[in-house]
Image 1 (cartoon, rainbow, N blue to C red):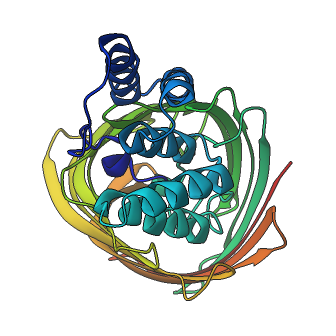
Image 2 (cartoon, helix red, strand yellow):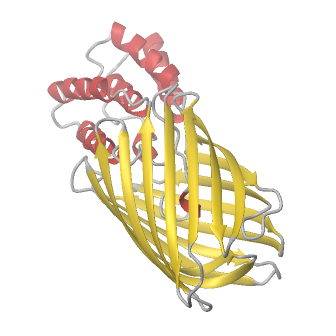
Image 3 (cartoon, one colour):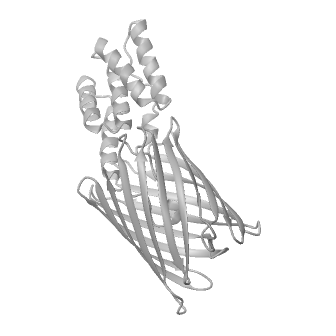
Length: 353
């Protein structure tokens, strides 16, 4: 994911005297970039550079717009020119490091589904018109001689613009010799302050999956490099009643993008309107651009089989990038419940066209 904290940097401190008309182009570009209109901002900075090729402030801002538009080679060339003209320009070195971080993170980007249902997050694709297809297969073994659980979930995600994507997924699950099917539609958009997403879905006559569900999520970039504040609100109607959850949290990506950490404080108001709480932590380590290791732990209430129960869960996933546009992930997990325990294995495949 592109770190919007960098893209929201204030106008660089290094400024040189400029004619009023040219300053107007520069200021309009900064305003457009801060508003998330990266294509418009880029055109304004390019117009300024056509008149003043030595304006390192405009060139740096143009590079930041190119990063936001995922035109990374062009951004690198612009940043090299900035550093050549102003070797002490710290923001240019930070931007180059961010490009490397983005390239590493892109190894995981095509997958739309992670280790839990809450992770079915689609981040806007960086190239307009790109289509990503994914498939997640899972099988769970239960203790106490209970029958296995299985599920299959195909999904499609398409970038509508450089900041907006839409996605659709189907989940077919079998538990205790009963099958449920739900469909989810959603959209995700990068904004001037971070990102927002919306999902709606549900199924007909479902017994353990929700009859209907709505999720609204947001992420807000901070002044701390790599730190994003998160908040999700979900409300779901089950046959046993309505369950509402609020998940505030934070995500931190270390400089260079090799590792990410996320923590959530989980609040659930169950089908009896009783408040329960717990936590969830997740981490990712990428030794290089091809491989990634994912870890997950949660101790929190979960709505399952028509009731809300306390669940302690652990998961570990290994992900490999296949070429430039395909990703495969194998995940194993363990859940500890009051009534039974569950051991799960899932395989996720994704390809971007």
